[in-house]
Image 1 (tube, helix red, strand yellow):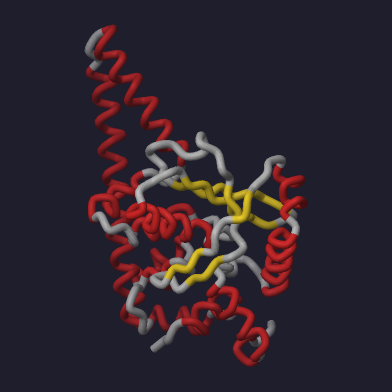
Image 2: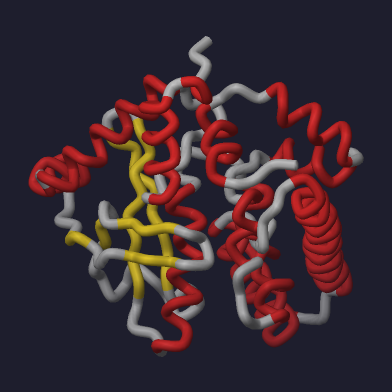
Length: 270
């Protein structure tokens, strides 16, 4: 295994990639990460090739500088379509599988300026985690930067887009049954159970995530523990929420992956 910390060239590469929003995935080797970087550079220089692979014409997105997340991204593309984002989603990120890697394409609808920065920061979390497949806590991380406490709390209630669509369909179905057929206590009860289950899941994962953030603050010298949480897997967030500081430090010291090297090279660790 390569000792990344002993190589100044690799160290500079990993820190530079982190600042550009290119985070190593949980199972991504240094070799795979390097290949992904080359593909990103290739697409940035030759958007015609990307257009051919995607089947539509993306346009180069503006350079994003986010001081809170400490990111500066200039390789992103966007899809400009009015129907891409609904009024419920002022911005969204589509992950496309290109040449063996996950490539994020952003889409943003016309929204107020005061909402745009927050929506962008939310999507940045999905963009930088494009090589992750960790759906449980990703929305909790993304909504953690929301200025609205209610949005930060309720936002992660749907983990996937199909959950939101399914809830809307069930809500319409139950409403139509009550209006045009007859009152069905079975359907009302089932609907109430689904809503209660959704809120129970939301509250449980909020508690786990909050405990994990507290643990991160105890072992890293950072002003915002969410900066570390962006790098973590669902397992690690659950692990951090349950273990004491000494056990978490032991776990971290055992990690040798490019992902963990990016974390330890970018943020002070006690």
